[in-house]
Image (cartoon, rainbow, N blue to C red):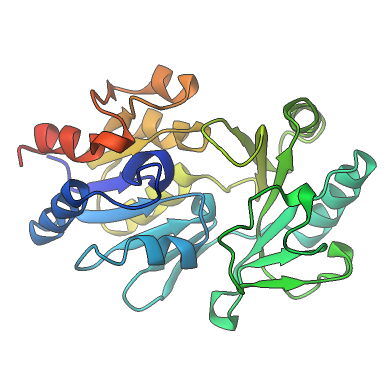
Length: 277
């Protein structure tokens, strides 16, 4: 019997217009009524994820920034945090600068009113359209190297596919234990997007930590996602589901591939069948 349902947002629970369909919303509200643990497991920052899921009733856990911060959505109370070491962060920034790469930095400053730190103007072409929905929840600094007190969650590089993939390969080969990183495939804002974080920064590791704190075994978890940052939770959950529109890497490790995509309420379609709702 499954007790916890963990679902990614973009490309999974959200359609391409970035909202939750009526069918998906209704199903999740029925989940809450039946006592399932509901976990939103997303690469998005907490504030953004909370805004997008506010129509879901009842208790809900938001595992944001790829598991580097986990909060309870009603009270905003923090359950898990994983920060990038400041020296490792500065080293990463310096290495990226050698390649003329300009990242966006996600921080755990929700209570202070901002979640993102930038060096250039918000609309700078090097950020592509990544910051389109950032609103005023960002802070500008003259240099990332001056950051001292902010709690760094994720460093995001967007841009040319060849440049980003080459940088990612170097990070993995030269510093295999210093960072956790992955390249996103199902994106529309740029050719490529690289996320770098704490070496324990991973949706699955934080999901498992939370589940175990609630007495839930990994075999009792259903996990659904569509991109490379979902691979570990799809692979290791009791039932791992990849969306029809998922990356090939996510599909390869899945127990189930949905018959419908994120624009067809594929999440609701599969969960109704699996959970007998």
